[in-house]
Length: 91
Image: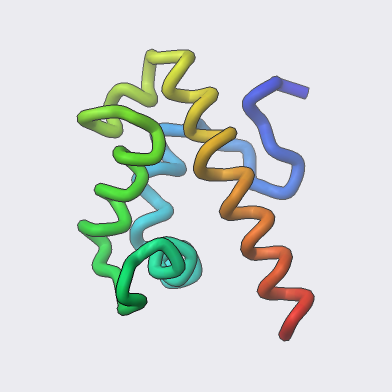
């Protein structure tokens, strides 16, 4: 298994996933947990959240920057997957 691949996520590149996530309502609910006061988050705000979490100016960096790809998985995808699992448990 590729080090960057998470078992419960479809196989795709971090760049592609970073473009898909902001459009997903579930991901925007995850991001909303970090907004004070809590409120609905727009697609643009969710995209900005990804860049802030990963420490990049543009999601294009995820195409080639291995460090950014690692941070994407460690600081964004792993917490999102854990959050999603907790939501399923409480439902």
